[in-house]
Amino acid sequence: NAGVMQNPRHLVRRRGQEARLRCSPMKGHSHVYWYRQLPEEGLKFMVYLQKENIIDESGMPKERFSAEFPKEGPSILRIQQVVRGDSAAYFCASSPVRGEQYFGPGTRLTVT
Amino acid sequence: QKEVEQNSGPLSVPEGAIASLNCTYSDRVSQSFFWYRQYSGKSPELIMSIYSNGDKEDGRFTAQLNKASQYVSLLIRDSQPSDSATYLCAVNAGKAGGTSYGKLTFGQGTILTVHP
Image (cartoon, rainbow over all chains, first blue to last red; front, side, top):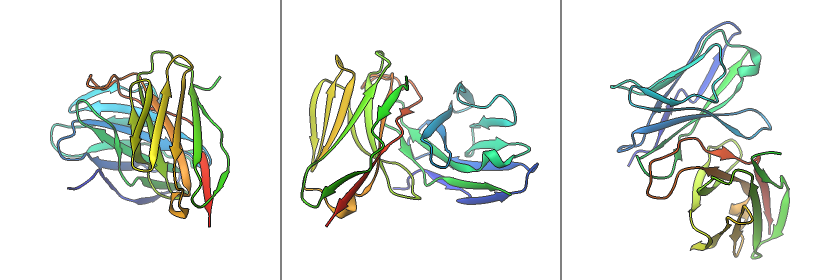
């Protein structure tokens, strides 16, 4: 019974590079959520997706960040031209149509 | 005013005692309430959900909800050192059995330390 899967678990990027974070939801879950946890800060919602649709992106920075959940394959959170302030833990969660959200192990992004 | 507020702690209790964690929220449309446990360097783990006023018990954990007071709490009975973690309160507008309303809004978390 695989849980939410995220990869990579750790990602190091230099300033200006692109970061791609992947998330595969739990089996039977069709809703995916991305959250960011900055050092010494709480979890902040970024985006909520269903297959091929962005439902709520109210927490996404307006520039450099994008997310998708294609018909086939994992959900992708993409950060272009990373800056040091993007260093954080990025968590993906999934839920069934009706139900609680379960979190993946996270991707720790370090921007050098 | 923050949307979800928790005392950051740290809250320190002796082993075997009851740990009481509190959370208040500001959005009256909130319908679903969750407690997550997060160990240092790990991801949040769902431990309790509650949707109706009153108490909900699961093993050593009891969640309490009072929508009129916009207050939700978590009690941990017979606390163990392994319960030492950060406890996150989360709310969303989704109703139990209804379509997910998406985003969870989290409090800052309460650090709990259970000492032997």
